[in-house]
Length: 74
Image (cartoon, rainbow, N blue to C red; front, side, top):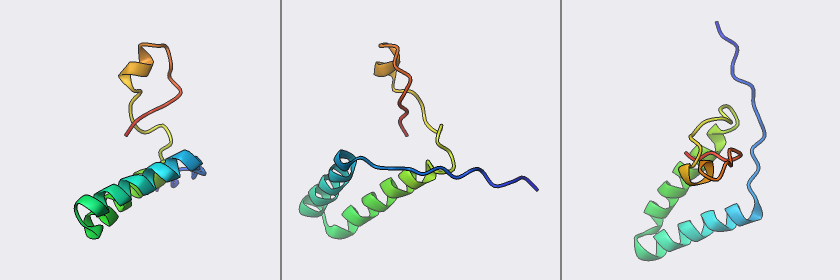
């Protein structure tokens, strides 16, 4: 049986935390809290999955054209 993938610590910047909160608040205001909670849960699952798969996702095309390969998007 294969070993489980290594775990990495995933940290969110203060700005990222504020963005997530703003997304939640916006959806809660214009739809309803249940939808906002589901979206936030999905985003947090994507963030948490980075602890096992830190190189997941693709390089954003607009950054690659500038020669930047430090960031990925999911």
